[in-house]
Image (cartoon, rainbow, N blue to C red; front, top):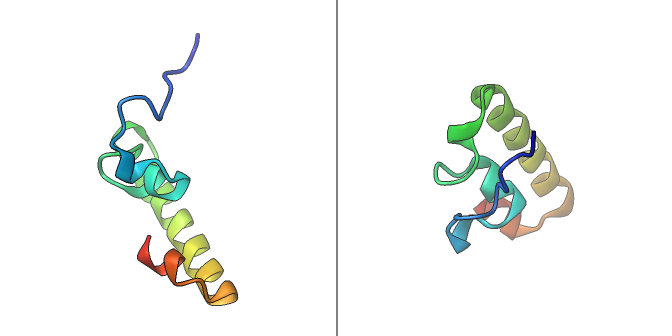
Length: 60
């Protein structure tokens, strides 16, 4: 069974992979394990922001 394209119909502001995965208008409404997934990505983003010092990561 083919999967829906997760980007189709998404607002341009959520077309970044992290934004698509975390933004309420992105993937979260389609996820069964939403709390676990968003927590995982949040931890990854926090770690990446700390390691790289990239301010754009903090904005996500």
